[in-house]
Image: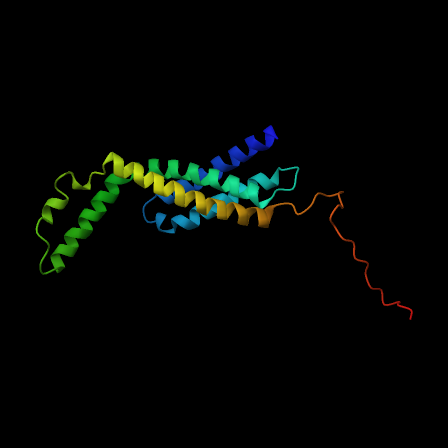
Length: 174
């Protein structure tokens, strides 16, 4: 059982790291929900690949939740690293928008000059909390899907619960 926990943890680290990186890169992150579900499916595949026991949907959900939590941490780090790029992109986009707009709201120019683009610590923590909830739910969904696709249905050699239906050979006698 302890070996299964380490395999589950390493699978969640691999799937979560991949999903977190893809969710943190600008323009690639528009498919954020898909990356989390895919990362959890990858973690479920890695878990099922080496598992000697039949895994349940609950196992997939657990590895998916862990994958989502790892993805939140990785995504927060990657997003923090890309913050200057995102800020510059938004500033340029708003300048282009201001060229074509007839009247801009008062104080629009000051929006990017001061610290208004700086995220506060409470806003950052609330964002991480919301992301953790959403990523965990999506990860659980991806883990359940992954186990249903990649998990073993029954162990070879064990026929408990398996019904053997004889083939109809066509030699039926009345």
